[in-house]
Image (cartoon, rainbow, N blue to C red; front, side, top):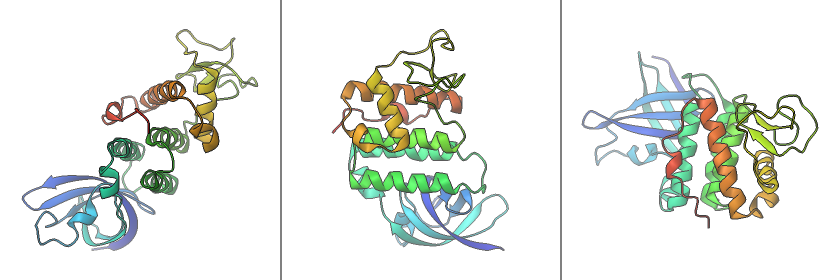
Length: 245
């Protein structure tokens, strides 16, 4: 049977039988892969701890009829213990893993950009570079942008009229001018719009200096934008700790 090797982030692990697991991986070159890891729940298993969510691994698999099979695993970065020790990081990280899985709907369809973004986001969580909520919102906006749904936070998302504009419409795809503003559009604070643009572009000086009310408003708009494009919300998103550092 064909054998292949790749780097991957473990997205999810499910019990199978008495000693096995089905693991969902986001790989560098093969996209999202589901595979059976046999015997990893036994106390004698040497690779079971490496196949926990958040971990960055080098994995060898061989192709099966319905699911591939894990044959070897080497640890590259063990993020699971550090992220799980901090509730804010854990809830933000869990939402990132779920988003990565939802935005790679086709198995074995390469998505190097999504993989690289997830690796970078998890490293940032572990390093404690920024508030976990900000890291999550930046990740969500950028992952949506990679998927083809990049919001506009300066020019009108409908007609392209030069901004800045104050109204925000999830349906329209970002800020809208007064002529394009649909009924029910939100009117966030000016600082919130600046924060959203900074998160998308990676301007962390602006993001880190934002106020708590702007962060709360921004996270609500990001969640609404994500839900609109995914057609249903993330199960993990309501559990994210937004209390801040």
